[in-house]
Image (tube, rainbow, N blue to C red; front, side, top):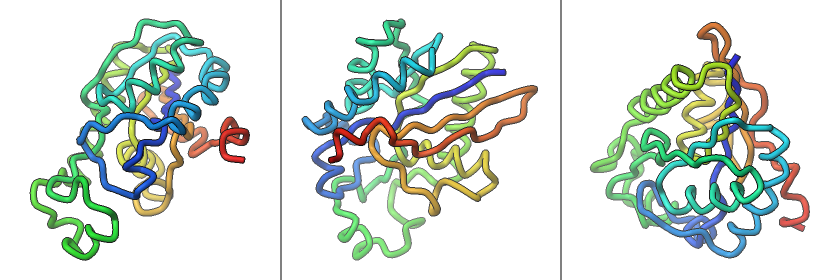
Amino acid sequence: MTEICMIRHGETNWNKEKRIQGKTDIPLNETGKSQARACCEAAKNFEPTVFITSPLARAKTTAEIINQHVGLPLHEMKLFVERSYGDAEGMTIEDRNRYFPDRDNIPNVETLDALKARGMKGLEEVCEKYPGERVLIVSHGALINALLSVISNGELGTGVTFLENTSITKFACENGEWRVIDYNNTDHLTMVNE
């Protein structure tokens, strides 16, 4: 069995302002760094043997902070970058809804089907390369939600679940069968969010 622990990156100013980030490379803010530090113990308790991050700064910095406690080689995987929101990137959610009421028709957006396929390809590659390992991955909300949607057959994920910054979602793959173990777990954030 391969176990995957996915952590959404910490907060950025664009998260705080409810702006759509997508592939725009926005750094963590101070709250995001605090959230990453609060995540360290939970990440360490997962006892990972492999550590992977999206190359975008907000994910990579989250991973680097966590890795001060985990101490593993940190691998970047582009398959785990955030969904591209095309021409809506940088807009507030309110503006996006005004200018692009049909979210599927935003110019240059990565389709949801393409996002799901890319995310699952990433998970499959991880399982092939690290069978039986415990893999920690720092990624992004839309991507993790897309994976939740695929693996839960739409019961969770895109359009159903909101993932908090540095929330923890866990999957397992056994004999090619995926299942959700936990999702949007924020128990480690009680002290940061008080």
